[in-house]
Length: 214
Image: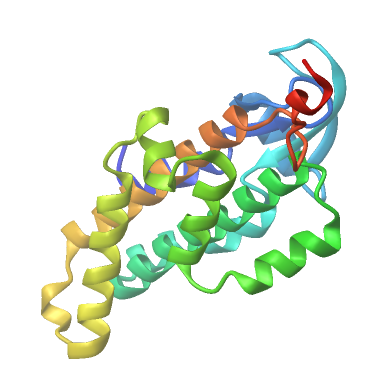
């Protein structure tokens, strides 16, 4: 399977059990059913926990145009756009992860949006992930089995910036596009794993049991 075919298959692979176990599941049959619904949402039986309830497509339908455009740009050999879109997808899914972490902490919606608006740039968001979880995104990715994802992200960013600043189109080719497509595929797998790992509810402020003599 080519990298662009693999990326297309990622759109019909994962779904999330919202009110049951909370896991993001590798369940292509269920994902395909959800994609046929209007909003990527349906009432289905979770193969993990057995509960029947709300399940949603992962990643959400709002990412579909990004991945589809990435494939289209690959087919028309617009290499720099493939790199830009791969980076866009990665950062967009980081935004989703941040909102999920805050939501699981019962953080009010208005506070969530205020925090999101205050975090300008990837590095600021990465620092905030470390504040919430104790590890940077690179550390989380290493624990999840993708130790090289951040160096790959940095390489794509540098390659994109070099092209945009120097317009050396001949330096971008098939290998660059395939690397970006492979990175986008791993992006979906990584965030599916992280969203499953950090699915448990926990308070925004942990109780200090010592105050109660415990």
